Length: 433
Ligand code: UDX
Image 1: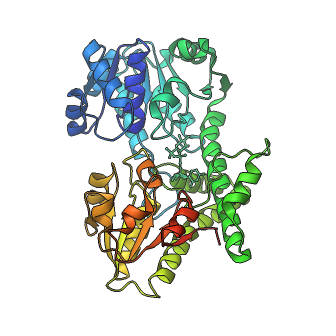
Image 2 (image 1 turned 180 degrees about the horizontal axis):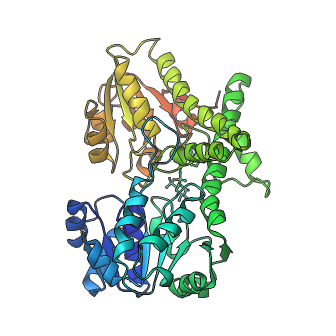
C-alpha cells in the first residue's frame, strides 16, 4: 500500500483483515512510526481496532522504504493524495508521479500495480508508459485503476462492503489479478464493473460530481425557499419519497466540504477544459458557487441575530470537522464560517468532539473550548455547523442556561425548531422560514 492516509491506512488494515500480508509505505516517518505502534493518526470509527488486530497478527507492518515495498509486494496499491494545485483548479499529481517513479525502477518481478488515487482521466495511461519505460520487469508489470469510493466516518464498512468495485484494466491479466485480490468481496455479492482505464478514472470524479450536484441542488432550493418563505426540509422530505430521486445527499445546509468533493469537481472541470469539453461541465461552476454561497448566507443569518454587527460579540461555533464522525477539517465549511466571523470582529469559541487538534493546527488564531457548554458560556450567539450526534441531541434548556442570549443558527437543519423556540431561543436555519 503506497501512501497511508485515510485511503491507504484503511485499505491496508482491511486487506490484512481479508487475510493478505500487507506492507504500508509512507514517506512520512512520523506517520509510519505511529501506525507501527498502533496509533492511528486520524479519527476513523472501527479502524483503530482493525489496525491493532492487523499488527498483532504479524501480517501488517509499515515502512518508509520503497525497496522494501517493491521487493515485498505481488500487488501494489497506489493510495497517495491528489490535492488541488495552489491557485488553480487542477489536481496536483506530484505524489502520484513520485509514487510511480520511485516504485517502477525497483520492480524486480511479475506484479500488479493498482492505482486507487482519484486522478484526472488519462493519468493511468501516462503511468502505464512510465512503468513500461522504467520497470526492470516491464512486460510482466500489469497496471489497473480501481477507484475508491469510501466515505470518511464509514471507511471500514465502505472498504469491506463497497457498493461496487470498478476495475479499470488494459488487459486480461490485470483483471484476473484484481478478481483474485477481491475474491472474498465478489463472492459476497459486491458487483464488479470492468472498464478501460480512462472510464475507471472518470467513474470516481463523475460520482463525486453527481453527489456535489445533488447537495447544491437542494441548497439552491433552500435559497428559493428562503425567498418564498417555504421550508426546504419539508420540500426535501417530499422529494425523497420519489424513488427516482431518493433522499440521500438531499440535506440542505451549509454545504459540502472535505478533502474530496470540492477539489474533485474543480479538477474535473480543469481536465474537461484540457480535453476541449469545458462546456459539458460548466454547470459544476454553478454547483461550486451555490455551495460557497451557503456560507455567506449562514454569516448573514448570524449577523441578523447579532443586530447587524459582530464586533465584540461572543459567538460559540459547534463543529469544526467538515462532517460528523470525522476529524478532517480540510475545506471545512464550519471552520470557514468561524474564521470569517473572527475576521469580522466576533469573539469566536469553537468546539468539536474530535477535530480540535486538526482545527487548531489549521486555524491557530481561533479560540477553542473543551466542551459545548464551555464554548457557549456567555455567548451572544450559537452556531451549530457540523451535525454531530451530541449537537443534534442538545437540550435547549440546558444550553440556554449558560448563554447570554438564546440565539442559534442551525447550519445543518439538524435541530427541531419547535422545541428550541419553545425554550425561548431565536432559531434561524438555512432554507427555513
Ligand atoms: C466523498 C464521497 O462520498 C466518497 O464516495 C468519495 O470517495 C470521497 O468523497 P466524504 O468526503 O468522506 O466522501 O464525505 P461525504 O459523506 O460524501 O460528504 C461530503 C460533504 O457533503 C460533507 O461536507 C457533508 O456535510 C456534505 N453533505 C452531505 C451535505 O451537505 N448534505 C448532504 O445531504 C450530504
